[in-house]
Amino acid sequence: MPEELQVRIHGDAALPTLIYLPGIHGDWTLVGDFRRQLAGTVRFVEFTYPRTLIWSLDDYAAAIESALAQNGITAGWLLGESYGSQVLWTMIRRQHFAAQGIILAGGFVKHPLYWGVRLVEFFFARMPSRLLRWLLHGFAWMARFRYRHSPETRENFTEFIARRTELDRQAALHRLRQVAGSDPRETARATRLPVYCLSGGLDPIVPWPLTRRWLRRHCPALRGDRILWTADHNVLGTGHVEAARQTLAWLRA
Image (cartoon, rainbow, N blue to C red; front, side, top):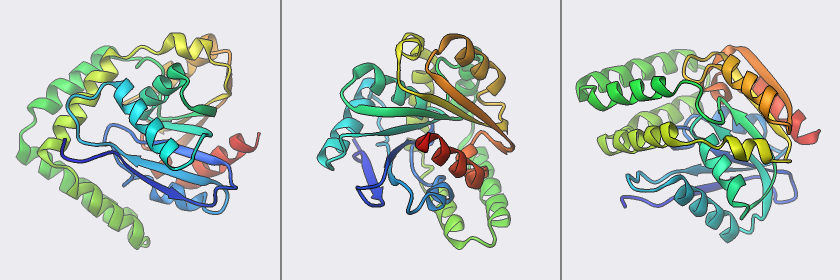
């Protein structure tokens, strides 16, 4: 394996603990603004996944549980971003960590568009490396313009682009296949932990009307959901100010 699971912990242990499980990109490079908004109010724990092509969702969950235990973290809220929501539900099913609450950020239970996931997987696997590099450079240019007054955020995007290697793409494809095969609906139906759902209004990747409808009908533990209309799928990044306020309100509730 080219690297191990990485963990960073921000904030005092006396504060409420919020554990961030990243999306399909697998690292903490897009959550910096959200984390800064919460500084001084929570102990923020963030992970970067290894670029593994063999781990199951149970392997991800076990590694995260082990890392938390090694750092003396025995309880906390789980914040699952997109793909990270599947790791989150696996941790809830395993019951090896004392979760206090669940927040889905652009997350889901079973993905509402199975064939959409398969279609993304098909094209992503066959995308020429040159085209992928071109798209990444375009993304980086837009990020530099959008965050021109935030040097730290621009630096995070530089790290985000640098991490997008061919092995990283293969690891992301592996995670996409896990999403297609994952079905934690029984876990979501059975949980008694408070569940909250945060979505960006401009999200074609995980359509929030479908996710929201399923949760309202089938998840008795759902306590609230919120749509940030000007944010996109990366709701913690593109809507970081309001996302942080809402997250903190849910933790305090």
